[in-house]
Length: 441
Image 1 (cartoon, rainbow, N blue to C red):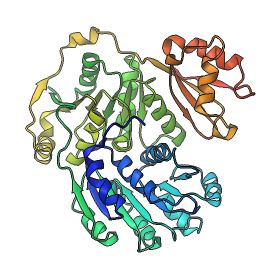
Image 2 (spheres, rainbow, N blue to C red):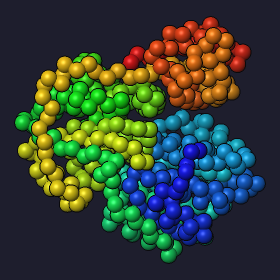
Image 3 (cartoon, rainbow, N blue to C red):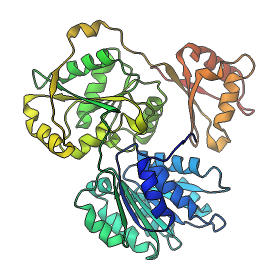
Image 4 (tube, helix red, strand yellow):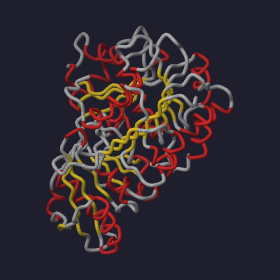
């Protein structure tokens, strides 16, 4: 998988996890927590016993999907490990059918896992490992009653692992309730200044934020940038305004249907959209390789949320810019960030308006959607083969491929998009014709 050495959180937590001890681990986002608890969980898995042995609870569907995919990647060398995702916002029918067929590892959100448990569809009697990923966020979102119900169904003799980027006071009673003499591992450093270049830009007027965002996007020309807003209405308005200015942009907020959210994240992750305007629903669980820039349109009310936002960039040692827009009305928020992060905030002026004359950085890729997926036995290799065979496009012009239940998405370079469309529409994919949709940038 390309891992050359353990990250600090992996090096410090894995010995205790492998020894079967309960662990509370705190480390910044992007530090490798998923691989740490994932490797430990797989180490204790008995594959021949086809029953639910591990449960990983996550606050959002996006994070659950990301964790489940990482678990499948880690388990590739172990024969017949089945990982099942149970999240709200997804149809219940396919989940019920999958549960009837059984699984080794369940990854899910507390509400949906509770629902399946109450209906008798999910049996946790054979559980040996319980993982809470971002437990503080689950408490913030009101999941405590669901969590307490799930805990009652878990065997008392089990391993419990609690991983999080922060560890506020309200987590302590939860940990005391469900854990037995846990080993505590806290990597106190927040995000390394060498990987995140954090900047604060002074606004002359409180309402100059849209122009300021445009100036920063023109100045720094990020290949991928996330703009964090505080409300759903503001998120959509900012995305619409940037789109009118010619930016390749999409929004991500709670009013979108699940299909729209999935497509938005796929297109942004595969570099066919340059700017994502999002509420804090994306502050955790958003796993984008080489995210160049985060812009805080408004400072977060909670300094912990600010840390999570800027943690989207500069992940795994990559370089990134975190730009926050600050007006005179933001003094209390600035003080809270300084005290929490132990930094001194110094503001700088915005770029001059001349930068608006610079051309906008267009995405390098285009996303194509196919009307076939896992149910039609389509795999990423099938799509790559179809695109590159017999006078097709070069393999280097093919980006990320994501195969879902009934659809598949493939990113191809702008220069090769027309040829890719022609190739997929004229040729058959695994013996059948496919319908194709090309997303506009």
